[in-house]
Length: 435
Image (cartoon, rainbow, N blue to C red; front, side, top):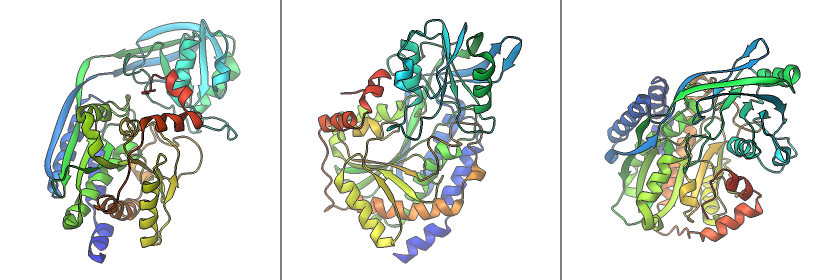
């Protein structure tokens, strides 16, 4: 055991790939940069010994950023368009709805430009996703949606709108910094403001990168991440680090391939940031063969904090597998049993496939530097990638054991869990309710 641990702790393969990804620049879904990231990741997986490395391409609705602004009296307030906002110029009375909780939208917002925070109060029992707030505003008749960061530092947040059925949103949407959001509410509440968004929405393509290790079994363990990132930043935390982790795990597992009792398939998804398009494509492609997916290790948010945090979606055997690894290495790993319907594991979990959403513990609520210009590589540490890779390599080997039985769930039970956790209402508003 010690040889692979030492090799992983001194490996620079994952970190080097992270540097490769962030140096591409724009990895927006459907962009040339995303395609470059696909090709680089395919080549990296092949170079560490994974077999059958290839790209599975698919068509998507593209979105290319133009200019955006908020005009208030004789001022121009800085903002950035939210991906998949429509191109439009609208004018309306500014209304600051604070946190933008569901009850805050229980009013007629016709003709209004709505400002909401990117967070919720500490006492609130669940996080309200950006898209949920957006569709509450649209359904209440708002003319435009302004999403204000709760993290200081002049950092406007990004994040997509739209649904699978209607990829381009209903009303123009922009992100503003905490400081601009506060200024808008203080100076222009009740006054007319104009929100302007220009963008292009071409048809384009994206793709998923695949490779594999281990025996040719019917069952398989998926180790996944997403390749794309928002065009305003390097996308180091979200999610260059996740894809770098997949490459590092492939390197470590190639050295332990004779221990794998179930096939391990690596899938780095495209177009996650615009609605889990790549993972939905793969789940649909598999169809009934989803039953052969034994478990998923989805890396999205790793390395940002030192301690791994794994959502287990109520699968007891996943919890037990983590406990085995935690005890073996005498190393803390945080687990959360609740559902997390916001990354590439979800199109599989919704059908009852056991899956980990692998992130890391961080202070505060929300994304922190994520989805802003500040998502950059110098905020991460190579030692954290290496330490977490050791734990996740062992976790994957454990999941692949033939005697490690992980029952699938009935989708009705997943739906019931979402209802119990008060997440169902928001998913129905955003068009994400698959049941």
